[in-house]
Image (cartoon, rainbow, N blue to C red; front, side, top):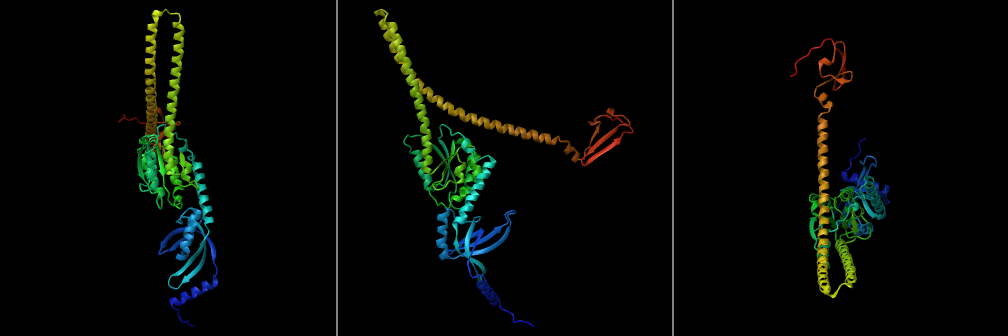
Length: 440
């Protein structure tokens, strides 16, 4: 018996009613965001679940969050977690099933639990930190020594960022009138592309790292939801292995990101980074001034003792030698002035030479290491070319007698057993006759 066929609308209507009657309540579901986009105030999400062992999708579904819910849920989530909802993030959402005759099935999002995502973010951050510890690089950058005269600064930031302007103003208008040279390497500091942009800037600096004393990564203000870009393994590995000290001033106070953990020095704001550099140079200046004062005091003490000794000697000298003493005292005073002047000049020159030698020594060490690495690579290639296995693969063979290579028929006699080694095995033979041919 034939039944009356249904129209597609009628069939979909039956599906809709079945879902409404069979699944009338809401459900809390945990899933990963595969794709997220906003349109006309609504949010459209592709949810996915992956096999934990093989990382392959085991379930997928479409979800929608209508404007009246999304406008409240989005800022609530970002304020609670400090992160934007984005692909790759794991979430816990409350949904109900909806089937529309024209648009098909979809899960409708009613609510979200930010604490679930916070736990996942913390877990991923801890996994990154553990991986850095396992690789032995988490403290590498911190172990570098900040140069005494840190004045050549490579800045990674956005040229339009307010924090960059504050940093430059604080650095160049310092109260001690110290001179600093800054070079900006443009990077995206908020929104999409933070990780790749900063890594590219670091690569550009690395190509000319001998021109700089340190690197400063700064971001002024910006949404806390952009902090996820600074919590990635690849960026952390780049900073940890960087050959120059890296100072971070990301401009956040609540949490410490992974980038802060692997950097040489972490400060809260761009202006604090500038203050750190000024204070570092001022401390060096104070050390030099203290050394100059100690040397001047020591010189004055020696001169005073010599004056006293001279006074004791002159007590028994007749008056006709008083004029000679006066001339000597004047000469001593003149020499003392010259000594103090030359002492200051010598200290300044020595400080510059120490900084110069420190830089030359580092460059020479790196050059020597690169040369030895290239030499080792060349020797490895030569050894590989001489490997007998390569000759066997090309169709040649190696004949031995008594475990030694046979090069001349004179070293064998009739009746001896010889072994011929080929690429895929060996052949044992007994000598019946010997013939000697002239060398080609």
